[in-house]
Amino acid sequence: MQRILVKELIDMVGQKVKVAGWVNIRRAHGKILFIDLRDRSGLLQCVFVPSNKEAYDLAQELRTEWVVELVGQVVARPEKMVNPEIETGKVELLVEGLNIVSKAQTLPISIDTDGMELSEELRMKYRYLDLRRQRMKNNLIMRHKVSQFVRNFLIAEDFIEIETPMLTKSTPEGSRDFVVPSRLHAGKFYALPQSPQQYKQLLMVAGIEKYFQLARCLRDEDPRGDRQTEHTQIDMEMSFIEREDFMALYERLLISMVGALFPEKKIQQIPFPRLSYQEAMEKYQSDKPDIRTDKTDKNLLAFCWVVDFPFFEKDDQGGWTFTHNPFSAPKPEHLADLMAKKNIEKILTTQYDVILNGWEAGGGSIRNNTPEAIERVFEIMGYSKEEIHKQFGHMLEAYSFGAPSHGGIGSGIDRLVALLQNEPNIREVMAFPKTGDGRDLMMNAPSEISDKQLKELHILVDEPKKSMAEKSLASQKATKKTSKGKK
Image (cartoon, rainbow, N blue to C red; front, side, top):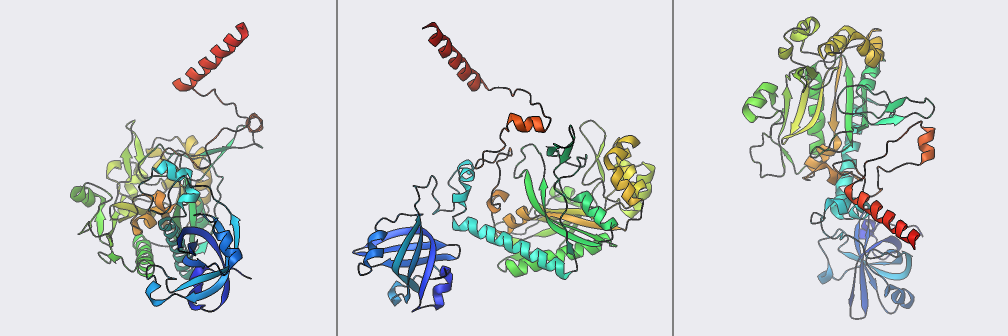
């Protein structure tokens, strides 16, 4: 007999079915035993009566979170026993057969609450249990729906989904890279992508014209607030467009998504208001302004665009660095200053950030499409011609063969879904997040690797510094060994 999801039983009164899932609750009323069975589709009340002796006797063992298969007849609940709180509240299963698939020890964390009362460390250590709670399941379902909507929308707009490599070259274009040693090429390293930035621009050089992917991005950042070492972004690029073209398309995507998947939400203003970087800083003291008229309304979405960012800013050493992306193009009226390397502090870029309720929900720009303009950016930042060609020679060469005007965006799915789901941080909408300092408490990663692996990778690891506790323990062990030797 084929297993059926519990939500499908609503219209199957009188039929014999097989269901499977977890024991959510077990309770007894007199001689009758009840359990609420939980599967991915919802809850179902299941009834064990003494007349079905074999199943009834076996059910005496059942405890919460045991995994079971049940066979029985779907019956209508008496009118007074209807439960309007659950989708299957008008029916129940009269159990005729029970198979205990696996037993469960007492769970180390409760899963019958929203989980917010627990420490994040404990929830992440037992994430496979934490995900059993309905709130977390709903978040992952909505994340899936957002991803599916984006795919369908962009495919309808004639975009092509293309995967770009996870092993690439380490280049100085933002955060610190995660590096991967090469076994076959001793002493050389790959980098994991901070974003597919260079690849998507090379796809424009290749003539693809409309690209997207739901891209994994990895950054070896120091702990910083609500960040993760890896995240997923909606990554897009288009050829032969101007800034307004792309902003209009992405705005339409967001408006359509909210309308289709979050109908309870209200967008405060359409079209999205636009602020220059200078206006945002003067009025809100932030380049991520929260422009909601009512900040107590959880269903109010205040999108806005922030544009006209400075291209360059001073770094800690007093030199120039880019504010967004070294491949961004300046506004057309500032191109001459970029090429002449003058009035640097006044050069504005074509960057555009989309902001939602005070959080950056995405950022992009129109790109430089000539090797000369890209070289000027890195020269302003203090790179020699030799360094530029060593790090970015592949881009300069590609652009020398004819590159279209193009632009795009990277928009974090994690942040977007967290905001739309009214969650306090992105970890609540990620299946297996890491701690702020990049640790996976469930898998115990990062971890040491064997000497054999290190040798194959041509890596010599410095002796790690021991903590005071480790030093004390080592000293105690040494003392005990000496004492035993004397005896």
